[in-house]
Length: 112
Image 1 (tube, one colour):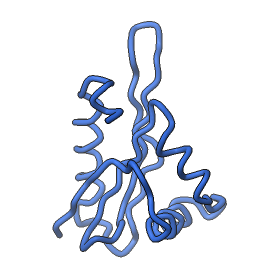
Image 2 (image 1 turned 60 degrees about the vertical axis):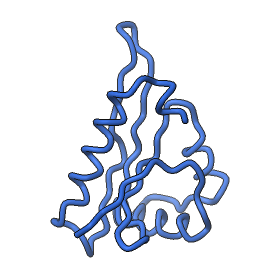
Image 3 (image 1 turned 90 degrees about the vertical axis):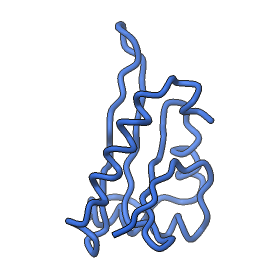
């Protein structure tokens, strides 16, 4: 399967629908996000919403969260989910590789 991985800077209504579908697969108790809540995730300093697309459709996501601690910045991968229809096809691995590469970049590069 060919997967394109990107950091979200803006999210369309179609993307919001796909993200909410994935959130329900990750947690049955997760409340759906509205456009404003998703915008806060995407634009918050230290957050990078990483999306995996196959055929233009979002099939997986994670959030790379970077926060300061006494010894420097600490990255953490949170909220990983891959659509049940494509699990086992390398989407999660592609997301993880992208998150690791992103975490290794200088902070200003991640914010652009």
